[in-house]
Length: 430
Image (cartoon, rainbow, N blue to C red):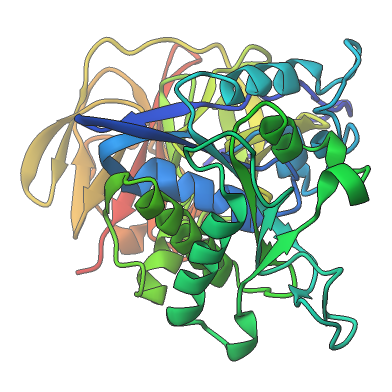
């Protein structure tokens, strides 16, 4: 087993993160819906719903354009806008503004002639009500509402009647099953041109003033259950797709709360330098002595909301606004392995590529392969390389697992003091 103490100077890595635009095109041509999530980084209902659309929806007719992570820097910091409110920069923005490139790019997407309707996904305070009830339920609240800037876009026949469309969505949501009675949806018309100078700087008003129908979907920040908010967002989006005659299919049951929750919290994997793959769902909060390069590490998340920042030499991994784990590196020269590793798994010999996750039921043996093998948490006196040994899960100390359920462990491969890769040993349920 390896023990090493490192001193690493403090610094912060703060590169701007790029948003991603996905285009899901149906085989049958039709209308195009643009969905934007994450303009405010502390409104996870919107961007986790956007990530759900990216992963679990297929379009059969029409098109769904989607960016779940518009304000990515603010998302991982769980801040409304670390460079100021991005949703107040669509009327004008200065070139030196940190948000300039993102806002300029997404404005071009909004104005694309193929885009027929835009949805901006938010979480808002309180519960919108047409009449004042109390400090939470009142006309100044934003939550549980479809927001329009004006009643109609005059002269625009296609989806120009914003109030009619928003009320169709409201009716569909309120006849559907709500988690609680007070989660009713409303339609909030901000009458932006005449009553709301701040909204005049917003994404939706920019779109509307360019004859592009645009709506905001606001689930309530007073609903603390992320799964409930994502389901409400998705049901609203689906109703917009129905109105637009966009045909879709999804790979889950939207009425099954537990299924949706499990998928929201499936954080997928991160790959480091193409020779380490770590499953992030249920990962331990801290992993130490992970072999990496001193600089120039290639880090790729399979989840669209995956990103990282470096603080004091520690890599902090995020999915959306959720800090998943911190990686404390141990620096090595990294080399590429050209051949797979032969491993006997439950009695069967497999060729296993470094940088993969290996499922094991009972036992494994890494066959002799020319590498020095270090199975983190396993120790046998007098052994330098832990290959050629039949190992069961009980032979590895639980405290060295990389997950909270003590099922996943690290096997690392070295030669001549250089690191060639890792295999995650995943002990499945028997």
